[in-house]
Length: 384
Ligand SMILES: Cc1cc2nc3c(=O)[nH]c(=O)nc-3n(C[C@H](O)[C@H](O)[C@H](O)COP(=O)(O)OP(=O)(O)OC[C@H]3O[C@@H](n4cnc5c(N)ncnc54)[C@H](O)[C@@H]3O)c2cc1C
Image (cartoon, rainbow, N blue to C red; front, side, top):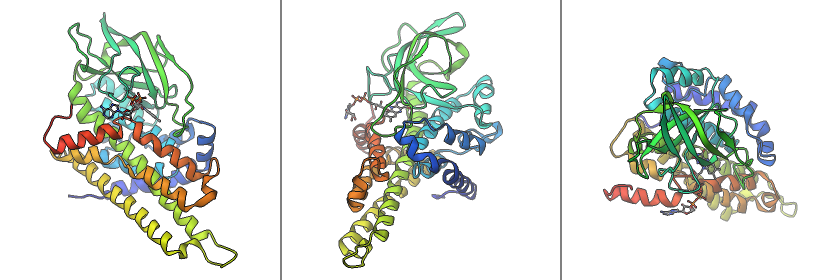
């Protein structure tokens, strides 16, 4: 099994590294401090043809799967976690559209995405069901060639900036029950759609993770993705693997930046009284080695999970569920200790990545729920 990027993916990774350094890094601090949605990052990724990372090659995309998504989000996340998450949620929504796209949906969404002309994003979370993202209460009523959508979503990354929103709703049949999950793509500026308060996060401050309300929003029937009530298939075959991999990549990028920041500080921090740097202190060498090992183990698990997922291996599930990079919070904390008082200053880079990393635990599937699902998958129990 080829566990590490193919030549094609390495070439994509090199392109992302170059644009990350030239276009994304210079703005990363402002994105965090001023809660700026990273239009510059999305434009740079669009210009490089990367918005179509997960679109099939015959539609003009790059034809990548989970491994490609994890590598690209890691590369961006190392420099600007908010940009990585914005790109990641675009890619997850793209994969959901692509999973069962009709010809019309290919023309309206996937080809423009591949041309870098369209940003989409995923809007599942609701106040009522919170972390239980597979239980939407937003309703769908069939109405003469259209659906009427009523309900509200919370924490929509790219909220107010994307061109379309992949939302989850109950199926429209009168008999539908909680858990009858349907996916629908809703265009921006749809009448009846109202954006709620601007995003002011503790971390991931550039994400524009806003709430949105749907009041009798009128959506063409042709915007239904797959069949009504396709719930289990969409949640476990597409939403969860892509969502998990976008986040695993982003948080792995944060974990790696914690290692980078600690390395730089240990090498450069010298004392006037001894002329020595922190790199010469044995206790800190040990601590740094442990950080590096943690990041590499995490990378190994993410790559393994993505590869197994892309190959459709039946035993991929526990790998995918286990790899959302818990390492980021631990390593950002370790970097905060190793980098001393410099790092503890408000808005230091280490402080920023620690705040960004914390989102990992509360983003669905949340860490608590994932741990229970991993155990259930390994013990042969149904996840829900
Ligand atoms: C920065 C950011 C970006 C986001 N972007 C998106 C997005 O683009 N699209 C989207 O759909 N959503 C997004 N979300 C929402 C996210 O996926 C979660 O749905 C949301 O954070 C859950 O928040 P809550 O307050 O409703 O949590 P609650 O449901 O109140 O949960 C609180 C805590 O209880 C724990 N908990 C709840 N039930 C259980 C259980 N059965 N077992 C164990 N623990 C449990 C949870 O793990 C969590 O730690 C985003 C969130 C953030 C913070």
